[in-house]
Length: 356
Length: 207
Image (cartoon, rainbow over the protein chains, first blue to last red):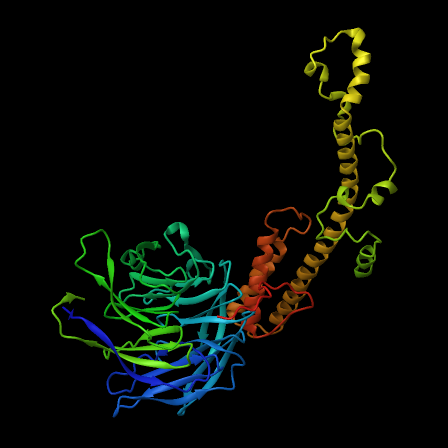
């Protein structure tokens, strides 16, 4: 059983290099463990993507590669494939580029075109066979990767009535989640096995949903809960009976469990749930907040506590917060101020012992 | 066909009669009404009213007898002057509106019909080329592409061309557009024509 006392985020390093706001971050899977140095990708309004690698000796991150001269506009989102072999980057130039690490250098092996305008999000499914993109044209595209880095467009999903901000696959099932400027979260699943994708559920205001743009969503380790953040200044926790779904019993709907309000006074742009159960949020007030589930609670359903607020984490809006997937408890944050900060979660000795 | 359509569109009409105008003719400048022949009798389509005016005799509590009917009728028309003028104006406006509405409707119908026909014809042409290409070389397209092309073919045949008021026209058109975009993305081609409808708006919000 993991016990954690009070904790703090210690600022370990400030990564500078981008010449415009940094929009998104992605930790490379299977790095930062077994002697392999941790690798982080960041993308920016300066139209480039930077790959940062941690030095095994000093523990500090250096910029190893700059992926430029491909995208002609802001790169809005980046995501490593589950195997770490490919990096997908989504850009305002309406394309998504796929990069592969070949012979010490990154090469753009494929370009996915199809969106009518700015692509805002990109996400790989758990097996790495499918890629989803979303954009300002209100559509969500699903692509399948074929041998030879060929991509087939599986489906174009319309349904959102506004800009789609982010897409995210479920961590264990091929179910796609998208969140949008139209205040809803839509869940898409395939009917049988014949490329027939459609919206199986919409989480809107009437389902205790958000009352303004939903910016991001993140799943917990088990995949039975997700947290969403919004312009309406709240975080919402949703849950579903995924045991039922995984045993083949049909689709189990997601329902609202809890709303965390009153903790943020500006738009929350990013949220990420760590493997240990800590929810990190990055907001427009330049702060990072950490929330943990309150297991002592006697009320129905889970409740969450604000455990830490890092004021002035950056000089400007925090656009993205990402926990590293390794046990090194690192948190990376990206901001409008053009910097990326690496934080370490440290435990502080104290009288309060709360189970995690 | 195109020439005939463009000639039809060259009608000489008052500038108020564009497909986006929704004003009825009764709101247009008075000259328009004066050009038409002045009608004294109500249009047969609209309900006739003069004979069904409010019986003011009832309101004024005058006893109604047969001998007084003719006098009543004369007074009725004088007493109901405002009402009868209103009704006459309404009927005239309604009648004029009907005529101009039909004209406006024809313009909108021609324009929309042309746009729909152009888009459907474009898809038909693309599908025919793709099908020919598949016949020449079966392996040229991936299985998925071939499946989507045949699905689009089916969908196109299902489009109710002769029944424009069918509720499913917008749904079928949306599905066709989505399938077309998916095929173009898979084949990695950019196929368009001038005036191809786009789903996105023209705002430039960047976040």
